[in-house]
Image 1 (cartoon, rainbow, N blue to C red):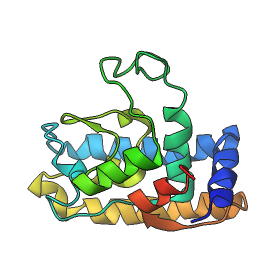
Image 2: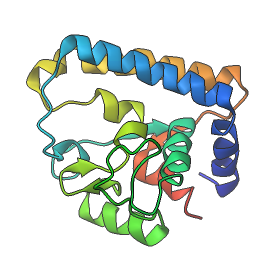
Image 3: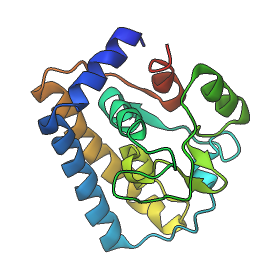
Image 4: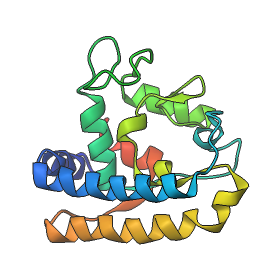
Amino acid sequence: MSPGLAQAWLAAVADPRIAGALEAVYAEAAAEIEARKPVCVASGRCCHFEAYGHRLYVTGLEAAYTVSRAGRRDRAGSAPGGARGALSLPVLSAATLAGAQGAGMCPFLQGTLCTVHEIKPLACRTYYCDPTAQEWQQALTERLLGRIRGIHEEFGVEYRYGEWWGVLASFTR
């Protein structure tokens, strides 16, 4: 994916209407997940893609949303509003991304915790290692991913769906 496309996605998520539409999808995911109460023990397994045999796929808008808001964190590493203040956010660079990919993990994982927890993409929000989640998480993800594709279409933002490391790489060029 080209750096120009990444810049277009970043410009798009700066639009409060687009950001708000994504946040509405994320809020719907949170409500449905809360109703199902899957167990998360913050093991970080979901972020160790290679070790646990799974891949993370995102849309361009989702990646741009995460990258742009991660850049707003203060020097102490906290998100706006002070959440997750004990974590420091790694700088997203080609080297950081290559290191994470070489280790088979997300570049935003620190220990067993996500440094972008509040601003993470849909698939991160809906994926649980909890065996009871296997019954519903894929259907929820697919339904809400359709809504995110609709946001791309409604606002005329080019839609691309790709593997996390590859989409993030477009923001480091």
